[in-house]
Length: 462
Ligand code: NAP
Ligand code: MG
Image 1: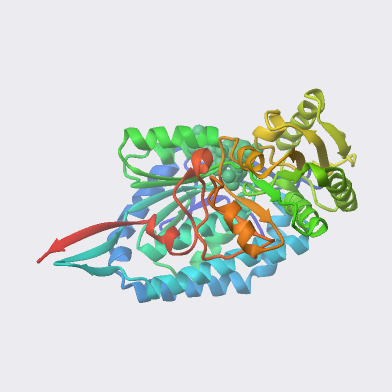
Image 2 (image 1 turned 90 degrees about the horizontal axis):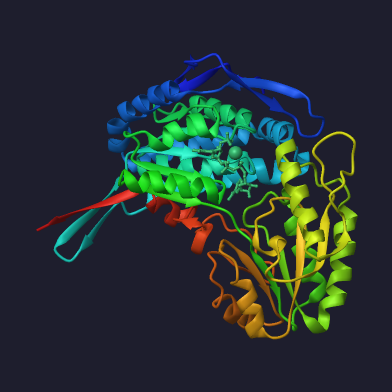
């Protein structure tokens, strides 16, 4: 994938308004692999105008035709799957097989699901003596993070387009090449000019300009709680719609009846995957006191097996952030059983898979999102305490429950203040609503719930 020097606006690559660029760095060898333009508020202005101009035509396009365009987009993602995987690996550092299966594979599923939903969703319904129309919200400003570069884009753009909205995307500065590749795919799928626009750039400049733009009707943001809070405030002051997918500190609750080895092994794999840079990762493992030391031993062995095969974290900044969290865990008295703050390699932003035992619920590593390959194992005495600990953070994004009988796990899961829970290692479902309780966010992504975020209702009475 060769970097573009311009912005994708109004169906073409246009020169950026300013001359500043962003260097894209490969986290494995720290080499610069490309440069993209650092957008300004002028670029954002051009892109929003293009999206506004395209809105009436796209909103009036019958949903079945929008579905065909989304299916064409899905087909391009399929055809360019290998290039997508290689691009994500180059700028995020994830091992290629993971990029192929997840970073390239999941967006294909999600784009396909919205091609189908656009064709089948009831955009019109009868309620008593009313007809209710589900109409597009308008111009969407999408701001995405680097951790799942293409998934985060498709999880916003596909439902927005299915709904009849038009989009301006500001992707993460660390992974802009994947976003440019997505813009190429949009062009190749022959979507009408202006329905999707891309402005690369820095968060506090291009991102903020997009979030504050008066002609954006809905801001959809995924990233840190700090930035999300600010974007929510800006949207609130302007009385515009906002969707926020923020952080998580999810609990993996292993009940005493569970298959302990399986629960621990799947739990460790979940945290280490993508080098721990997953907002829904089960970073707190809750184990009954009677099985605690056995679980710690199993987790230590499972984590040690990964070595540096998990890949680096995305940037030097992220590595130092994760390291300082690990150091804080040690200082606060948690027992380091594997890993630690030292880098396992001379070059690249690698962090060793790290497991802490004797973590108490109030420690920083049990409360704050680390976003690195770090697992905290917490002890509970009884089910009531497990519920209290699991719910004892400001977050509520995801979680897992393990028990011998599904019914026991379900009963426990119903007591969790969290948006998504996997029962005994349940499989990923691209149609299941994803999003947080509490400070993990506002709104839902994926499936029909994700689609309704981009719709507003109009009712006519007869
Ligand atoms: P972030 O700063 O919140 O970045 C997310 C997106 O928002 C990026 O596109 C970013 O641009 C943009 N942005 C930053 N400041 C902005 C502002 N003032 N106005 C508008 N947009 C702005 O997150 P990060 O720095 O990449 O990661 C920090 C932490 O956030 C992580 O350690 C992790 O805890 C959490 N995080 C959560 C998720 C999730 O999926 N929930 C994903 C990634 C990170 P830039 O790329 O230029 O910063
Ligand atoms: Mg940032």
